[in-house]
Length: 171
Image (cartoon, rainbow, N blue to C red):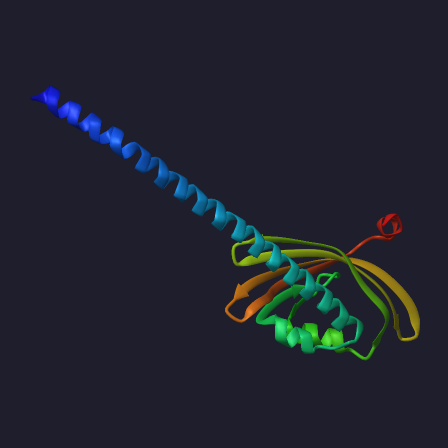
């Protein structure tokens, strides 16, 4: 009796093996398709944040705070290169300050790392400007933390660091 039951179980198993293999192949194809779509989606998000970083640089060049009203979160927390902590309104006031006349403001070396609904962007800001008639220039490393909301990507935090002159000459 046990021998017959084992023989029947083996026969049923042999009949179903091709079905299991087909199901495993289908599942693997689904996983591969989802992985490819996720990689394409991540690259699209990376390009979107790089675009936002370039748009921010353009807004800084033009002393225009409108971009920051739209993209920076209301609870934005930032730190300027000299250590001063600022919120969104203070950042916009800094950008729109008539005391600084920007002659050029360039962004380069943009890198974006995405972690689910959070992204970290780093870049290099190079600028020439006048303050009280005095010609100045600087290079600053900037980092921005974005979160992806139903209304798009928003900057929630940022920090800038002045590069010392000896490092600036090497870049």
